[in-house]
Amino acid sequence: MARNELRPIVKLRSTAGTGYTYVTRKNRRNDPDRLVLRKFDPIARRHVDFREER
Image (tube, rainbow, N blue to C red; front, side, top):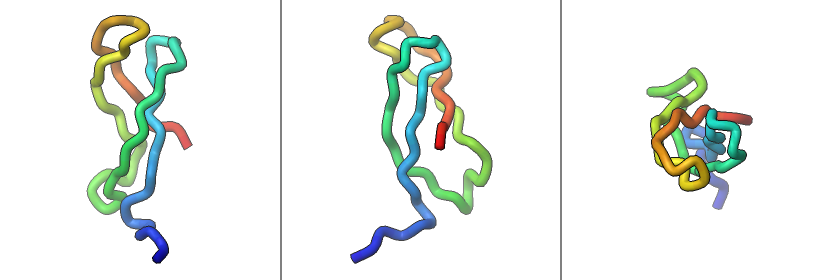
C-alpha cells in the first residue's frame, strides 16, 4: 500500500543551530506553506522555532 501524498513526512530542523530535528506529518491541504512549530530543543535546552526542510 502506498502512503497518501496528501500527508507527507517532513523534517523540522531547529533554528537554534544545534542540528536537532523532529520528524512529523503535515496536511498539505491545510498547510501548503512551510511548517513552523515551536518545540523543545534538548541540545539548546529551551523551546525554539522548528522550520520545515525538504
